[in-house]
Length: 359
Image (cartoon, rainbow, N blue to C red; front, side, top):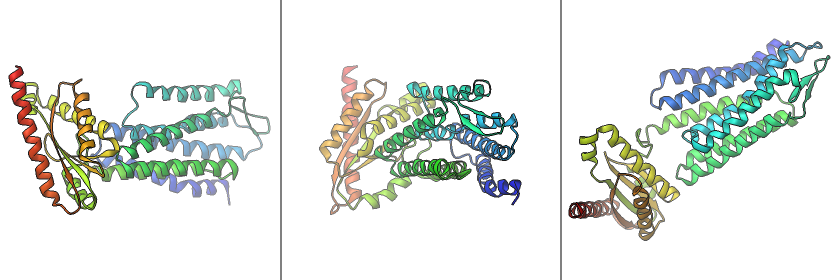
């Protein structure tokens, strides 16, 4: 078998997967532009890795060193950690604040990789075209490991915040990436990591695509359809049912515009998510109405989480009204939801009267 035939045979499927992802990204408009942009960048990086690794493998078969090997090796070392961090960025919903520091090791890694053409710090080749690792040759593996640990940590975090399916999928991606790295390092398989990266990226993209039909586009809370579907699942166990409504949203829309109204809805949804965490599943069932199902959570504890939410919202211009009802499997869930709504409207009316007295 010729080397060219071998490279086509081993990389054709991986390249096809990446090309399919390009096609999805061009035709799918259900996800945000930012998310599509990150997936596109991830696909391009994997594409570059496939070409660089294949070219490097081809050049390595020669007994004479070709200077292009320095470029292909430097490109491989620079790009290797990138898909992991990009998937982590999507999982984390963007790297902001201190998390942006994660990009610094990748920049440093790229600088050292390409300057190794002259310094030989990360790698070099002898006159017989044999590869040698330099004194900091471990750096790309260290950075990839840090990115994998971040991805693993955020996967568990996502799981405990209630997105169990997404968390499990990302943990599996981390596991398969580690297995692929082990197969290439210890068993000397070729092109395994790129294949796992391509499959993982497309699978994660398709998973998020299916989630767009279960979630509210504005807040990423679960939508009304998901609520009715999940009522059947969680109705078999005791839980607390929470109804939440944003106060004065109509006034915000009328006086400040719908963009400010959307900001209010997103802020309240994010605050609810941060306070309830893995104790409740949050659904946006109307314009400014949310329902939270809290399986195996007592009514008292659910109220304490709502008070935490109110305290956090004190730092914002937005306020909420809420109601809570306890449910057990022998009860009528629709009736319990109605009771929760009724308490929420009473709370809303009381807070309006209190606000009027204060003004």
